[in-house]
Image 1: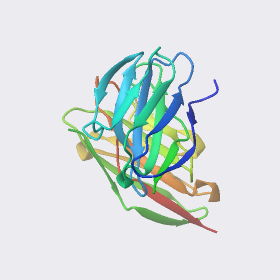
Image 2 (image 1 turned 180 degrees about the horizontal axis):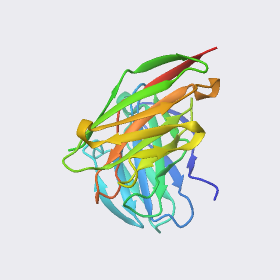
Image 3 (image 1 turned 135 degrees about the horizontal axis):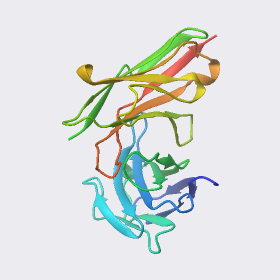
Image 4 (image 1 turned 30 degrees about the vertical axis):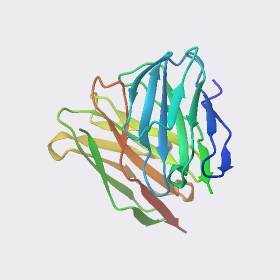
Length: 114
Length: 114
């Protein structure tokens, strides 16, 4: 069990550029989640997958955001035409399934849009 | 809709003193409840969770929390603070049967004074 892995850990990009974050969940975890956390705030839910199916998306996930989990293993979160308001930490998490299963978080990917 | 309120965005305690972090939730049905800890520039680590079993839940690092349905509270305590407890703490709620999508409170930053 190597934990949830996220790459890159830090990304600085110019406004208007596209960025992509990758998440490798804990092996055999069926559920994968993306959250966003801004400074001084708690994480906010963005979306989650059950295997390769994206089951729910938050209203926070505008059309510029897209998440995929093509083979039910790793996931990517792409932000197109970045804006300064996108600056945040993007957290990935995974769990075996639903219910009361513990959700394990990665260390996050910091995005700074300049 | 679920919501979580953490009273006090900052708490300062002396080493060896009691740590008390307050969390109140709103939910139409008793939910699952969680406490996570976040150290600087890191992801979230689960301290403990309530899943409708015992109302007094013991977690890691000497922390415990008590679920009080009548008060819709899930306060976190530790009898004796240690310097290593300095971190940010988040209370979260997940409604039963909702795919364990977490809704977080705003967090409480704990400072431990020697």
